[in-house]
Amino acid sequence: MTVVVGYMPTAPGHAALDAAIREAERRGTDLVVVQPRPKRHQTPEVGADIDVEREKLTRSGLRYELREPEHDSDPADVILDTAREREAELIVLGIRRRSPVGKIIMASTAQRVLLESPCPVLSVKAVYD
Image 1 (spheres, rainbow, N blue to C red):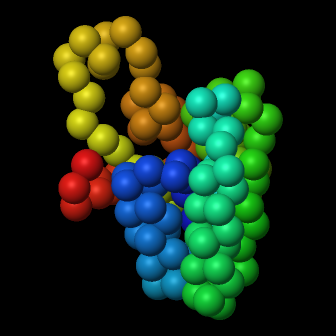
Image 2 (cartoon, rainbow, N blue to C red):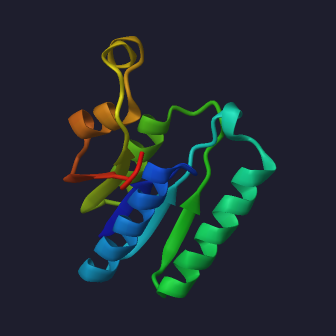
C-alpha cells in the first residue's frame, strides 16, 4: 500500500507533503509525490523548491517516488490514476480558501479528488494561507 500526495510549491502544498510524510511513517508504507507542473509554475524557483523537498524526503528515510507529469495533464486525473495504480490507502491534498465565484468558475483539483477517490482523502490547510 501507498500514501499519495498532490504537491505544489505553495503553503498548502508544503503542509500536505509534511502530513503525507507523517502518515507514510505512521503506516510504514511508501510515499508517491505527484507534482503537476502547470505552465504558470515553470520557474527556476519551482526547481529549487522541489530540490529542498527531495532532501526532506530523503532525510525521512521513506521509500518515495516523485512523479512530475506533463504540464498539460489534469492534476486530478494524475492523482486519481496514481492512487488506483498504486492501490493507495490514503491521498493527502493541500487545500486553500476559495471565493464563492472561484468555486463556481473553476472546479478544483481537491473537489474532484475528494469526490472520485478510491480511498480516504486527508485534506490539509496551511497554518497561514
